[in-house]
Amino acid sequence: MNVDDLSWQAHTLGGVSPRLVRTLLDLGQLELLIRAAQERGDWHCAEAAARELSAGGEFERALTLMDPFTDIGWRAAEWLTAEIMIQQGQGDEALAMVRPDTAELGDGHVCAHYAEMAAKAGRADDAIEVLIPHLGEFWLQSHLAEVTEGQGLDDRVLDVLAQEAERMERTESAVCEQCGQSCGVARTDRWHVLLLISRVLERAGRTDEAVEILRTETASGRHHPLNFPEYYAKLLARQGLIEELGALAAREHHVFDVYAKALEDAGRAPEAEALLRERIEADDHPRDRAALMHLLVRQGRIDEAVETGRPTYDYYDCWNLLHWALDLLVTDGRPGRALELLEGLTGAWAEGHPDDVLHLRLWLLGEAGRCTEGIAEAAALHEREPGEWDTALAGLLERDGRLEESFALLRSSTHRHAAFELADMLARHGRPVEALPAIPTIAEQREAAERREREAAELGKQDDPWAGAGETSVASFT
View: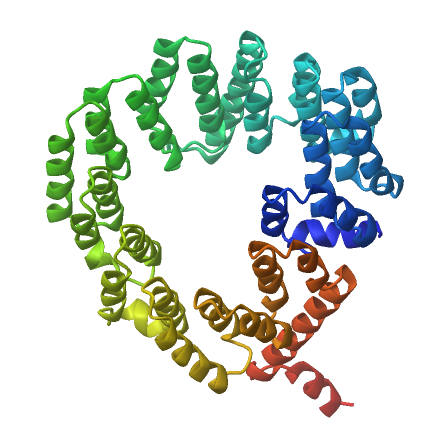
């Protein structure tokens, strides 16, 4: 175990996958995860096991599990150790252990972590102080609002955010003076601070003020990113200001779905449906079709929802609506109908993504109980492209009850995800002890990943007609 390997695990989700870790926890295999953390140096296992132990009041075991990771300076383990100590009632000791030094105070990420710990330890004032110097970064502005929620310091947070908004307004005015134009464009992230002020006002129960601050900013004529009117629309919906929301939706068409949902929630579903259909008729857009699909699904009108989305399924950028429609039909017990829908696709998306269509087809054949047919098709694909279709074929074999054949296929497969699929499958079928040994070690995974990167780079050079041109030119002049 070393910090480099742990960093690789964290950034690539390498080692034992978080999904398998969750599965093993659900199966009551906590001790298996502890052993994997100790023997394999697997961070995902260690983190999940420590949290589970702490939740069960086994604080000392959780801290002992973290020791090897903190001993080598793995920062994530230090933060988790502090969190466990806080749960144990040792808040002061925990904060002393992770308090940023002078150099670290300039690192927004370190300060964000410390603010979380301080808030959990009941020291929200410390959280505010450590974040104030970093409020020029919008994600840390959001962090300030998040970590202080429920801490009884809303007035203090509002003062801090108000000062930041004033600073940004001065900066914005100065920029506009320099450019010599009254362009009305928000050149800073002041709009984001105003959203946060509104959010804190709302949670403090000052809802009229929360609405007014966004109403005033909207009326200013400044241009804002799409999420500004979207947040404003959702705030109006939460406060039941439906008529004002309707006026906003008339100007900002991308929040019309929020307006329709507010009408539905107010018992005016027929009106919402009629308005959405009018919009689709006037200016067909996938967002409005998705909103109407959601409304119809909530009313149990699955077939109408699927038909509403149909015009979008052949668009290359609307694959998510197609997948949702297929899921709706499968969940409704009609995988055969989903298969018919898939087979009817002839547009740009289907033509440009033949492998995606095939994977969906194999999945639906399995869902429809046509495993023999699916296995035959997957086997043919496997013969044509060895390794590429192994996981799909293994899934169909599993569904058909041919577990040992599925296990054998995955064990021999060259597919990059085969070992992980095998481990998941073993765990699902009551063989969790065999699951972790099926997963390659961290060193083996890193070696395989680096090999794929080299091969991809080499392939890129071969595909690039200009690759190596510089070297050739230099050589010709020497």
